[in-house]
Length: 242
Image (cartoon, rainbow, N blue to C red; front, side, top):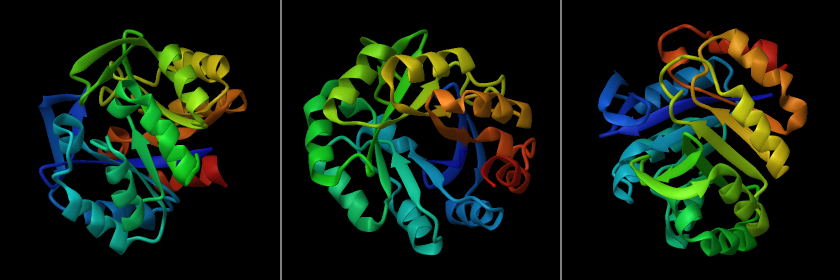
């Protein structure tokens, strides 16, 4: 099972939000590059980066921090937040991002996802589905879409997507455990590879995700539990990736 340490960047700093609420922010470091190096040194083989300013505003304000990470580590990076045009995708991939994650644009302009996959293939193009009470939300989790998780997932599958990051917003940053039931149900109903996101708070949570890996679970994103020292990344990598 692939583990994805998360680095969420806002105003150039490494932060965590509670349930995506920008008014409930904890700053963990003023230097995201040092955090990326830390996770790499502890055995990370893939990083999950979110440009929170990009998610909220639709355009990146953290390019310097992100490119700094790309230039200072040797493991692949997947990036989401504010990637809403073919030009955005092209820029980030050309700068060295391994996978881009399309969220808002996937709901509002699914044809763009199809175009992107035709150009770069599904190894480089992913979709992020962020849900609150079963409804997909967009624009930094602030706007409802009136679409269900399954509707968006199946639409993206038709566009050629093979891998999705699924976040239960109610769990994100809360350390209350991932939504195993919803994650498993999405994997089964869509037939896509799902990366579980939101709520991972212990090694037991990772064990629970691993238990459903045969249903189509690609891996898990770990955020606050790493920053709070509740999960030791080196130990988790040894247990779940080797």
